[in-house]
Image 1 (cartoon, one colour):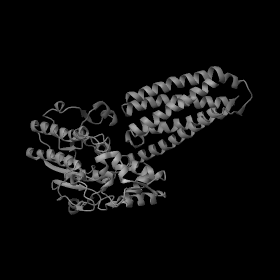
Image 2 (image 1 turned 45 degrees about the horizontal axis):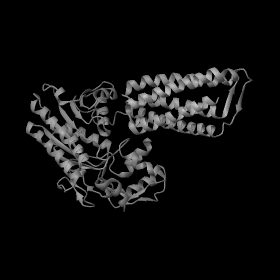
Image 3 (image 1 turned 90 degrees about the vertical axis):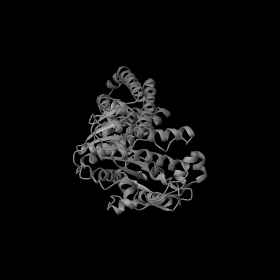
Image 4 (image 1 turned 90 degrees about the horizontal axis):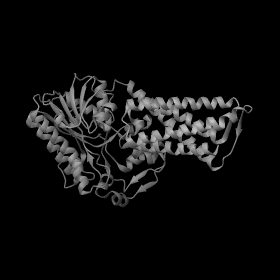
Amino acid sequence: MQIILYLLVLQGLIGAFDTIYHHELSVALPGKKSAQHELRLHAIRSSLYALVFAGLAWFEWRGLWLWGLSALILIEIVLTLCDFVEEDKSRLLPATERVTHTILAMNGGALFGHWAISVAPGWASQSTSLQFVDYGLISWLLNLFALGVGLSGIRDGFASLKLYKEAKIMNSNPFISLPQQRILITGGTGFIGAALCEQLLAAGHSLCLLSRNPQATNIQFKSKVRAFSSWEDLSSREEFDAIINLAGSPVVGPRWSDARKKALLASRTGTTEGLLGWLAKASHKPKVLINGSAIGYYGCRGDEALDESAGTQNEFMSQLCSEWEAAACKAEAFGLRVVRLRLGLVFGPGGALPKLLLPFYLGLGGRMGDGLQVVSWIHRDDVLAVIAQAISNPQLSGAYNLSAPEAVSQAQFAQTAASLLRRPRFFTTPAWLINGLLGEMGALFTKGQRVIPKRLLDAGYRFKYPDLQSALQAQIKGGH
């Protein structure tokens, strides 16, 4: 039995690594719409694994009880095989995850095979009973694994249910009312782009995506899009009604070294220049280019009210956004209407908001620095609705601030989040610590911008989430 216990501990350790590193950190599986069925399988498997871990940690399953345990193990094996098939259908697994799954399968085979040969026959020959045993530290360790995998299963179950409900809700899709569109998209697999593509596909539009990995993109969208990796692969005879340019490496990440700044700039202007090169050769010009940007265009200017007429500052984020917009504006020479969307901090399932709320869930939330820095934000649903209007309304052109009418201080954000979650907000992260760790990038967290969506309001746009409380309530209720 000692060998089986060691193999079971190894199975728990490898499984924990797979769940935390791959499912949570690498692909954020609970937030992916394409993973609904995979999450449902994970929820059932994890619940059974919790029973197996706890059951073998504290009991010998003698007599007829052995058949119950054997049934659990058999169902677990069948579900694992089904999960392998579902994963290959819904997403492209990285090499590390495939290797991890192979090791799990081999270890699981050794574990249950050894148990079936050396232990199960002895239990089967005894009278029916659940005999309590105590293997000391190993029992408690297996108990911890049972708790962890059980909680993971509950989380995956709720995430699958939430994704199922979202898939059924079509009346909030802003692209349904649009005439059939042929749309070229860059950045279609990111936090905003993926949701955009899902809603466009659900509304019946045809999509062509620039992607670093076309195979993974096709798997993500179940072969409902056409993906290509280089502008040279796109024929000049292709016809599109609109272009949505969202490509760009995440700004928040490693410190902004000179090399990192060049990479961030190239990921935006380089893609846009490639797009312009294709436009120059295209025999059929699209009607509109919708280009992503950010409120970083204005620089960090504290509590100063900034509408679309405000200028830039001598800061990296301001340079990054202004150069990206300048590249996009060159499309006007080809007769395209160019709409530049300056996005605030985008809230929604996935993205930055779950990370901002996590400390509050754990009771460790609070303000950053003095908390006076202004947070200009917008919900992803409003971003998608504005994109739909930018496609359909020929009156929309130029720059638009995509931020909710109610900008708040970081301290107000902390107070609202703590209140809705019924958690304390005692902790403070000093500004010097943030700036010391992040360098120039720290200004994104310790300085603020009060951005006003003047042009959207003047155009009569009505925000679905105009205030912070409604946006956070939607997030918390959604369970992400």
